[in-house]
Amino acid sequence: MKAYEDPRITAFGLLTEVHNGLAIRLGQASPNGLSAPEFSVLIRLVRSPGSRLRLSDLATQTTLSTSGVTRLVDRLEQQGLVEREPCPTDRRSSYAKITAAGAELIDSLAADSVKVIDRWFTGLLSPERLDEFLGTLRIIRDEVHPGATAGS
Amino acid sequence: MKAYEDPRITAFGLLTEVHNGLAIRLGQASPNGLSAPEFSVLIRLVRSPGSRLRLSDLATQTTLSTSGVTRLVDRLEQQGLVEREPCPTDRRSSYAKITAAGAELIDSLAADSVKVIDRWFTGLLSPERLDEFLGTLRIIRDEVHPGATAGS
DNA sequence: CAGGTTTTGTTGACGACGCAAATATACCCC
DNA sequence: GGGGTATATTTGCGTCGTCAACAAAACCTG
Image (cartoon, rainbow over all chains, first blue to last red; front, side):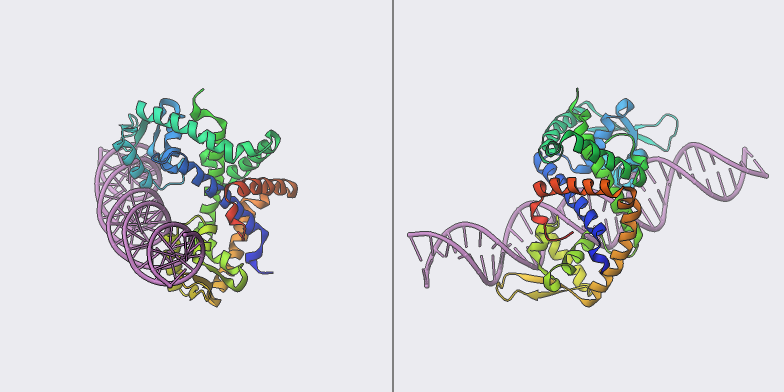
């Protein structure tokens, strides 16, 4: 029995296919929209108290490096979707705060995304099956990425 | 009710966190190893009849563009893990065929990966829960990415 | 079988991300 | 308070991936 035939490898491959497949559908949904990490950052901001989060917290919650976050926030700032503001209690830190334009955009994109997710994911499953599926995801997520608990 | 608060968005976010989290654990497992797409390509090759696949089939099965596959196979070829061979029946096509070194490497990396997957994913779930989880993933995969049915 | 269309693979230009190094600030301990 | 360590962010550089344009071969249709 070769290790590459192990069904656990296939199980992870299946998870990857599902995630990548959904990510592609979401990307096609709003063509000139945001990349997945940009969307994720904006969603996290709009859901956070004060609509703001420190850059390093964004790095922890997403799967990006801190330099990746720096550049991503640079881009969002150039588009007027986000503003940097200094942290009053720690002069090393800056907040990224979503702007009104950013909040409006993310709400509109989220509405499109819900349609796509419903069509290709949640809508395919019975409520019970979806519940159990999400419960299983949480079990794994809490082990593998416990720092992600503040939103999407 | 704002669209960005829709639980379906959160559901997809959860799926993303799980996938990214596991991908990071797998990447850390064998430091100087292969990237995830490289691993995926090699696994697909070693599982295919004749240990070979046409480049365009690799592009279909993975989530890469054809140019991405060209360059990925370039890299694997430089490392001696894969060879290109012409397709006898269609002179436009080439096969990527895994070499003995490639097969050996992927088997060893797969053994490491199984440990990681078991520790952070399959081993966390009861057999029944895992079965239902995989069944749900297949339901979604068959809708979202039907072309992926030849392996991991 | 000639001409147009589709498919396969490669290349150039470009963007996004990670790592490592640099900088600035905060924290801790004597 | 001073010196050393830890943390937050930015920047330089290399790598990897996409998109658009291209070349070659296959297919298809009159």
